[in-house]
Image (cartoon, rainbow, N blue to C red; front, side, top):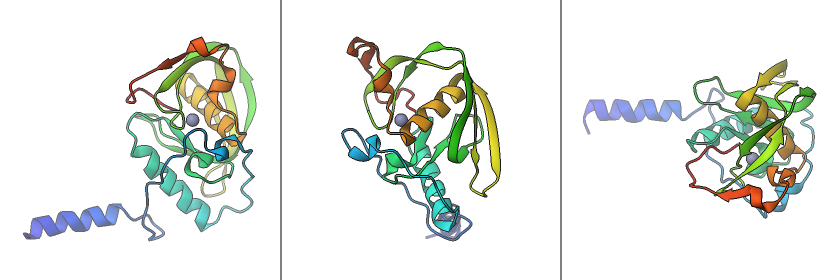
Length: 185
Ligand code: ZN
């Protein structure tokens, strides 16, 4: 191998390790009817290195699926109250023990979920929400959101309560089959 190829291998190896020195990994995503998707997740008591590692892995897993918007811990088999959101072109968000402070308005949206692959449904969501929680450093953060971010925050917090978007469908006529590449929350 040439020096350049070795250098590229070295750089790739570096970027696949996070600051704690652990290897980041893509975790298989749980799909219905996996019972963990219907459990109420537990609060995170201490934000320790295992929680930080899980967030890193969830971000890695989320980015492995190009058309996704977010991922909640139960979707990777961990029943803890935390999620990540990655809206294209914006900074990734990781939120631990999130709570909705308020929500306002109502609108119809199309929604999908990585744990219900191949479907999308029309449901009602808030126009905007305010959410609080802690980041991976334990710092309290508050997010006021509209549009897709507002929808994603409601969707991911629902996951932590064992709620899926299909629970809000007025009828199964509102559920459509889609190509897998469409946006999923
Ligand atoms: Zn989902």
